[in-house]
Length: 222
Image (cartoon, rainbow, N blue to C red; front, side):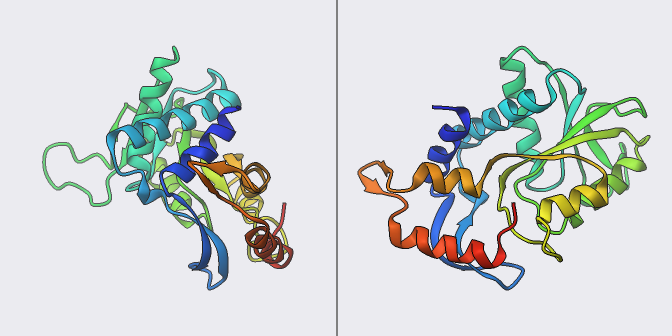
């Protein structure tokens, strides 16, 4: 299997990928949901970091200096991805922001590797909807000698419309001027899981796939 297919199985086995009816922040009722809070043990978060590392290596090679993770969900992602990259022969730095500024000792807005204007960062996050959290992160980094964010890696591209008929991630890419890559897309997930048996059960049967296709017909955008 490819590492993307391995990642999809990993989502299933961690119960991080669910099918049913879920109300999203946007108000849409989606037939699937990605719950990254299910990576709740050392082995799971370590494994998750390896998939981010492989995606980072695929899209950026050795053309970056460190990995930035927005607090809070991005903190374990940047650390475990950096550790996995080290195992792969790429020893890179990591850095994340503080949610609340310290008023004593080290008052820096970030924790981790030193940053300069020449630093090249890859930002990691779980998913992106409006891009608000990313924009907040960029403002934090501007105040820390304004390193360059060369790209963003997320777990799943839901391939849904944003405020227009365009893909939400592409909208955010245009606003930020930064390329965004995902480990997998919802198309990858449905193609791989349709009628596939994992741990003795069919994960995505025909009836649920029809619901997903109907949802994507209304809200989808590649």
